[in-house]
Amino acid sequence: MELKRTPLYEAHLRCGGKMVEFGGFEMPVQYKTGVIREHMAVRTACGLFDVSHMGEVIMQGPDTVSNLNRLLTNDYTVMKDGQARYSPMCNEQGGTVDDLIVYRITGDRYFVVVNASNREKDVNWIKAHVSGKTTVEDVSDSFGQIAIQGPLAERILLKLTAAENIPKGNYTALWDRSVGGVNCIVSRTGYTGSDGFELYTPAEDTEKLWDLLLEAGKEEELIPCGLGARDTLRLEAGMPLYGHELSDTISPLTAGLGYFVKMDKEDFIGKAAIEAAGTPAQCRVGLKAVGRGIMREHQDIYVNGIKIGRTTSGTHCPYIGYPAAMAIIDREHSAIGTAVQVDVRGRMVDAEVVKLPFYKK
Amino acid sequence: MNFPKELKYSKTHEWVRFQEDGTAYIGITDYAQDQLGDLVFVNLPAAGDALQAGESFADVESVKAVSDVNAPVSGTVKEVNEALADAPEKMNEAPYDAWFVLAEGITDTDALMTAEEYEAFIAEEG
Image 1 (cartoon, rainbow over the protein chains, first blue to last red):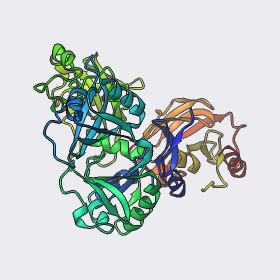
Image 2 (cartoon, rainbow over the protein chains, first blue to last red):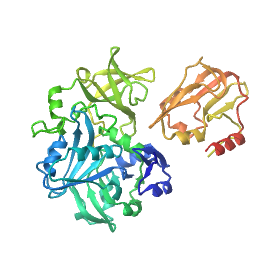
Image 3 (tube, rainbow over the protein chains, first blue to last red):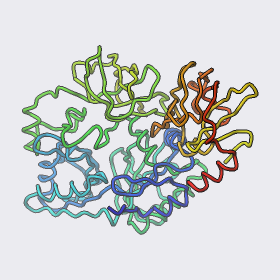
Image 4 (spheres, chains in turn blue, green):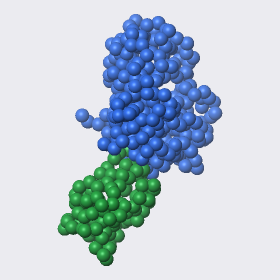
């Protein structure tokens, strides 16, 4: 399959990006600065990410709220214009089709942001399950998306736009705003655990916006960051990644996302299966390495020689400064402080169950 | 990129610094550390372990991945640089000071390259 390129492909090459395949796209995994400096920039100053590979879908019509409530586990009944709300989307078996963010643009018009690797699957799933008066349009190719993340993100944005164009609350967005003359949706969201924004912009203007932001952020030492840092940042922030902590066979309850599953609302796809399953036998936990070694995904976890689960993501986390992993393990061994052993390529590394997230701003 | 003349190099990007007594220090090259990215962990062998040219004797980990480090020569581990385990970033900062092991009883040196040969080799490979 031919790899797709985002509108920022040329910009990445200019910035020295090391390109790899991700979700069907050629994306920068890091720049010459390296993952650690890119990660630290987001925690202490600011980093710029190309997230144009994400999929965007517009759903519109008088029956959209009831369709969202049936498709998704979160409750969309009461929502203001510009508000964003995260949700898992389940299959009939209670497994997870994807996790996504829904914005109410205005009235019965909604903007749905899905994972790049699930875009086609999601659009097909949504189209197959909507009923009544709702249109579903995949607009991914007409949008670019840039994330500017870190404590100095707002200061940099203020050089390019008026304060009234910057949303105040987390998980809120403002539509149709000019940032340096480029039309944007300005959203106070992100996937790093630090303060920051995601800017959705017409594909053809994305490169101009990228260059403007890099220039505006010079003084703040804003640097481009690749998918490597995006992954270590979200892991440190305890955020699930589809294909790791979530999958077609992992229920959002197992993944610790019960807060986003509203069992008391009207019926939704997967509700019956989730109800029937009761409290899942396994759950997602954070692991901190106590011994020497870096835990990675798909490694077996033991207590007293008995296998209790597997890691789903793991690496050395630059800001907290120790190797950390997320894992899905038997609930009976999930208490904070439980000592476990992780099989790191044949060598047992001692680790401890710790509270998620590893990092909180 | 820097390739000191007094060192020998392997095709799998390790360097060898021969000592007058026939022992040799072994590490990874500037090219290797650049390709691997920020290194955060090294798993070293123990003194007395046998080294077999072309076979893995240690591994290094970046934030993203694990990579084997091959022995550029055969021999026996005489001494291990335990300090490297506490400061893996030294492999990025000063790759030719960041030795992994001191080896003795060295054989299988025929495949080693000079600095010029190694530089030509990576120019071709990269």
